[in-house]
Length: 245
Image 1 (tube, one colour):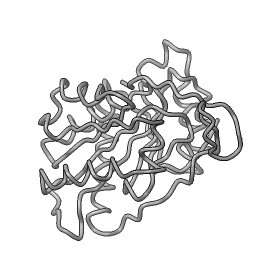
Image 2: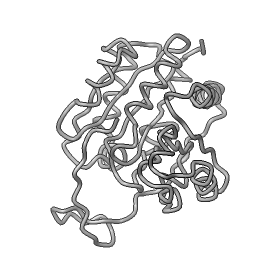
Image 3: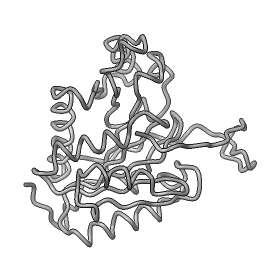
């Protein structure tokens, strides 16, 4: 188990992506794969509920006390990028309560293709797409797809049922990311889970050794909220987010 010193506090790993791409189930998969090997904690984000935290607790993947919820009260990206105070406080409290932790997974509420974490909150981040969203979605780009530390193409086991060519989708994603890491994942396929496990452990090792440098994928695309609050060039962007699975 990696040493966790004051100089090398837990790796904070963000998990972002649109509604329904399987962020919560991916976190559950990571926890199942690694809970007996490293010390884990989870922070979930929902707007007005703790739905994702309750899902993970009921899945039995960790001690329920290690899974905590942040109710953002606003669009998901606000709490992971614009004002990370609530999430940062939750992470630090979890680390204090269960010191030492090796990895804290921070799940964003479901947002759009532009959502990214602030490097003030997480050390590395993965962005989750799924085949049910369409084989062309990876080509649409954006900072999450293009520059997150890892892009996950999720639920590849259902690709034949939704008419998606996984190899082509992964190729498109790799091109959009200029060769950065892409993994095709199904929680039902042990080979893909092993690849995901290996990626997390490699980033943790780099973090522990001081070799990992957090990268900022860049700000979200400018937009305007439905209430008229401006965030750059205007286009209506009402957020209606359901919990992801």
